[in-house]
Length: 156
Image 1 (cartoon, rainbow, N blue to C red):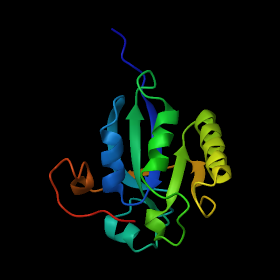
Image 2: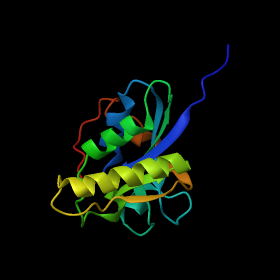
Image 3: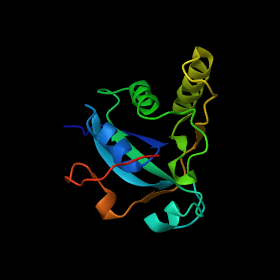
């Protein structure tokens, strides 16, 4: 029996606890992982990322089965779980789509432009669309935080 080929998607949309939880529940998502991406510090810690001095954003890397859930559906979820036009948030909570393929880049750019034209948001999108680079897995206590029954509120 041939193993299914999973694809990757990586998003930053504020505090990674809520972002991971939103994607973890999606049929076709095989794995989620909270971490840090988009910065310049090697092997950053939560405290370092939270300081805003590493350039990283709290991010979630997803492995998904494209036969069960499309990248377009993942984008729809991404747009729906935060305000992608909200500026002035802490740098570790900024809105980013990290694309892994040219097709992901194309879809993300088209979708961002369509949302900008739609008038849904009063301000233009601040969501960055950049190549996926090094992803640093967050500390274990951040992984599947809400699924572990942890309290706390996540806000960006």
